[in-house]
Amino acid sequence: MNYNLLMEEEIKKVKDDAKTLLLHACCAPCSSSVIETLGNIFKITILYYNPNITEEVEYKKRLDEIHKFIKKIKTKYEINILDGRYNPNEFFDISKGLENEKERGKRCYKCYSLRLEETAKIAKEKNFDYFTTTLSLSPYKNSNWINEIGKELNDKYNTKFLYSDFKKKNGYKRSIELSRKFNLYRQDYCGCIYSKRDSKKE
Image 1 (cartoon, rainbow, N blue to C red):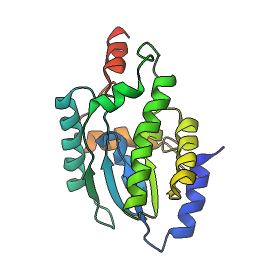
Image 2: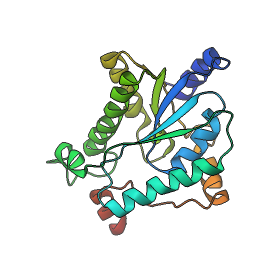
Image 3: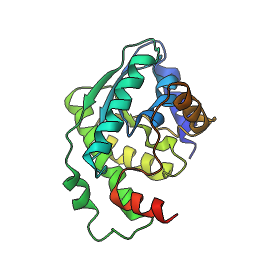
Image 4: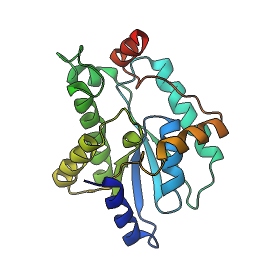
């Protein structure tokens, strides 16, 4: 399935209508090229909900970087930020028994589901036209899983999921360029203690 093409087809339908989009974001670097792509099409609210980030200092640092980036990037529509609750136990609860899974394994699938379901719930409660996530920008994330989960939540909550594969068409490369341009803090692990453990081994 070409999820990037599906997104482009959806954008053609709404391009002149300024629909609202709840965009789950994991960090500023992954948000950068996504916002550059969508910030002139949708009225975006960023949802920063990432209980997978084990260390609170790291959590706040990534959130601060998103605020910093939003102040600097120029888009047609103002971008708002919704700070989600921070409770790492929500991540530890869903990852029980999967502590030794490698990155991109079953633990990651459950983590995608956890964060996307919270996004879908809020999108429904606050009447957003669409919801999606920046997660598909990373070459280390399984875009098929992310979009499959998004489709399930679309049906469960009756709120529209915007398919995406933001790494396509040099999206990931562009995020690196923008990170350098805006001097954004980049990290070499997703945020959870298990990913950090594995990145140190490598």
